[in-house]
Image (cartoon, rainbow over all chains, first blue to last red; front, side, top):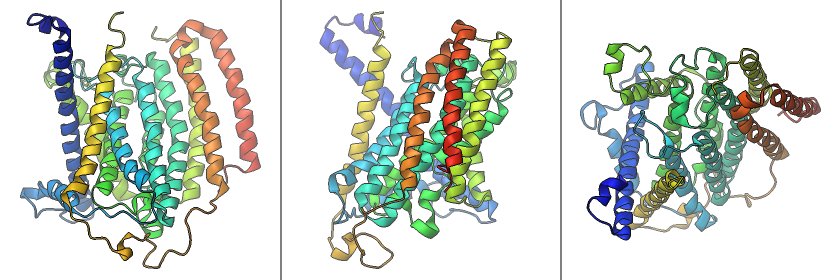
Length: 344
Length: 120
C-alpha cells in the first residue's frame, strides 16, 4: 500500500493522512456489517425459537418480518433515556459504552479468510483473552452504578460467573495452542489443514461450547438475567440506547465466541475436504457457514434447556470443568511430547 | 523490522474508531429524545415499592472468594501460555517443571475444595 501511494506523492504528512482515512473506511467496513449481523441474529433467534415452540415469530414488519430488527433499533433510539437519581451518573453512562466498545474491539483481529483481516496480530489469542476479561468491567460497573438491588445482584452474579468460566476457557485454549504452536489466529487455522481440532479434541470442544454459553450469559446459564428473580439483572435501570448498547454488546460477544470456536476447533475458513467443489466456494463463506452453525446451536440450547441453579453453575465451573481441562492439558502435552508431535 | 509495530498501529486506529462510534451511539439518544423528569420515574426500580435502603451494604463473601480463586488460576494460565508455545523446544525439562508447578497448584485446589470454598 505504501509503495502505491509513493507513486503519486512524496509528502509524508499527506501519506499519513491518506492511510488514516483508508483505515477509517476499512474499520467501518468491518463494524457496519457486524452491527447488521447482530440485528439479524436477534431476528433469526426469534424465528427459530418461534418455530421450535410452534409459533410464527415476527412476521408483520416487512416480508417474513425482515425489517423487524430495524424497527426495534429505531424504537430504542427514539425512547427517552432516564437517569436514576440515586445512580452515579458518570459511570452509569460509561458502562454501556464500555461494553459495546470492548465487544467491537475484539473483532479487529478476526481473520475471515487468508487475506481478509483487519490486523494480523502475532499475539491474537492473548489479545482476545485480554479484551474478553475486560468485558466484566462493563457489567460490574453498571451493576454498581445503578444503585438498585436487582442490578447490583445481577452484576455480582454475572461477574462471578464470567470469571469462573474464563479459567476453563483459558485452559482449553492452551490445549489448542499446544497442538498448533502459535498465538496467531491465522496460523492456528492454517495448522488445521490436515485435521480439524474438533476431532482429536472433541471433549474439549464440548467443554468450550458450554463454557462459552456461560461466558456470554446465555441460557441455560442466563442467571444474571433470571427474569423470575432479578427482573433483568445488571441492566434493569437502563433505558433506550443504554440498554441497546448492552444488548448489542452481548450479541456481539455471542457472534465473537462462535467465530473464535470456529477458528480454534473447526478450522476457520478451510473447507472440509480439499476437493474442487468445496474449494470453489469462497473461503469466507465457509467461515460464515461454520459460525452460523454454532450460533444456531446457541439458540437451540436456549429453546431446549431449563435454567441452571446458581450453585450448580459455579460448581460445574470449578469442580468439573477446571479439573477436567487441567487433566486434558496434561494428556495433550504428554501425548505430544512422547510422540514428538510438536508443530515447530 | 521497520514495520514491526504496524499491526499494533492498525489495531490502535480500530480501537479509537470503535470507541468513538460507541460514544456517538450513546450520545444520539440524549440528542434525539425529549426528557420528562419525574421523581417516580427516576427512583431506583424495586418492583413498585419505594427503595427500602441503600443498595451498597453487605453482600455474600463467596463472590469475593470466587474472585480470589480466579486470580490464582488466571495467573497460572498466564504462565502456561508461553510454555505451551515453546514446549517443543524445551522438551522434557520444561514438561517436568510445569508438572511440578501444576502439582503444587492442584494440592492447593484440593485443599480449597475440601475446605468447602467451592460449595454454595
